[in-house]
Image (cartoon, rainbow, N blue to C red; front, side, top):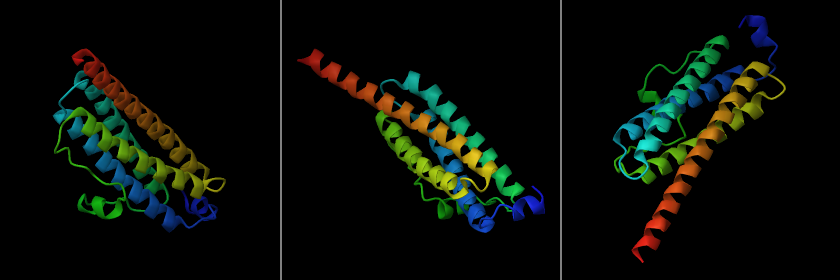
Length: 170
């Protein structure tokens, strides 16, 4: 993006770059949380959930690419040290120390809800001002909303499975 393109944005570009670097840090942590959780996961529905979590991981990585590209277009520098991801991220990284399917899903659900909030804020900040960033943020937001729904559905399925098993035991 050229200088004139940045000048006509009529918003605090440095604040936007900071917001995007925070989102970038969260995307990297989300990618790894999905990826490692899918690899370690144990328990019911693992064979169905694992490939979907790996797909979600790939989508988080794709979000990181979009965010990096936008930071560079805006004349900023993307966060370059992984150690800074934790400093910049407000979304927590939950290590999958308990690999049970439902625990992994709950951890990922918490991350998705945090990402939804982040991209809503970026979309609101750029709405009607920076159409390019707004479009990117809403595109990512829609995928994060889909991820949240997927995870809620799997948790619901697991709960239903547990109820069915209880009925069988009685």
